Image 1 (cartoon, rainbow, N blue to C red):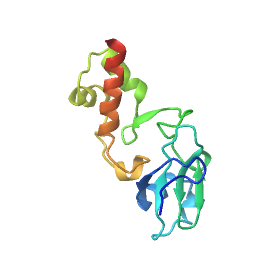
Image 2 (cartoon, one colour):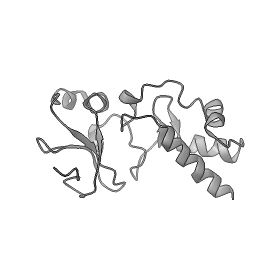
Image 3 (cartoon, rainbow, N blue to C red):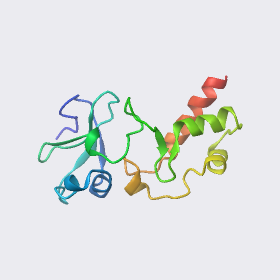
Length: 143
């Protein structure tokens, strides 16, 4: 079975049901059963956040409790959902406060200190790789 979003046809990332249930509106969470297999649509322009190929359910941005950081109109643009640290705060820590690595970001922003990623991050995974990418992005703007 292919994991492509039924709307934009981009391949999505598999996400655990516990993550989806925690982040969608309560009335939708009640409809999710343990056999469902959900994917996060990774297309920044697509309004679909989660989709389930078993029962063809689609969950759009309006049905999710948090903005999805990589979607075009995300506001705020969280990188660390557990500590509510935004992309802007990480970039500021690099450009203004001189952060150079993950340890600096953790110390300056408080990112990764309230680790409940499976519940809070739309991917259900640690935000570390996204923080590293954001640091690289910020360092690229300096150099």
